[in-house]
Image (cartoon, rainbow, N blue to C red; front, side):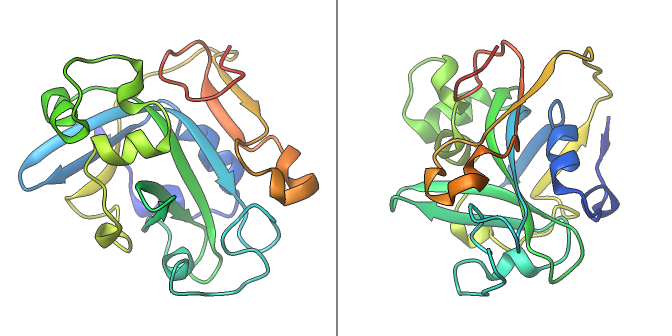
Length: 202
């Protein structure tokens, strides 16, 4: 088990990184409470040319400013006024590529996740979908801008290997407004995992 370094994220192919994150472990360690889950679904966003991205055409705003930070920075935004959506910035500083973590298979701190989400028992809905990921792992917009090189938010690799057919791709979810870019196969998921949030999932 080892923590991914910033070099992992500091590459120019956000789509490849999004695929490689499947199977890695997302960890939060807030107030000495560790919660984690294996990443089973991601979406890549190519900052400057992707109409589905918050940073399309290179327009920094108070909302997306952390997308322009160095690789390995957390970018968290609020969706529908409720959901804390966790993203990881990639590529060089000033190039606003990012990866949305859409689903996790829970590992550590499940009791704390249940408390945060108000659930009584573990089922697939605990960390299925990016809003549930944010709630279960304790994300809040105040953590946007944190480095994944620190001790509060980071990614671990336990060297789990998947078969060549285990990781699938599809168009992203909920970005129909992006026109032709909505059909780009930038969503990756672990085939058959019950925590995968959208279809297809097999």
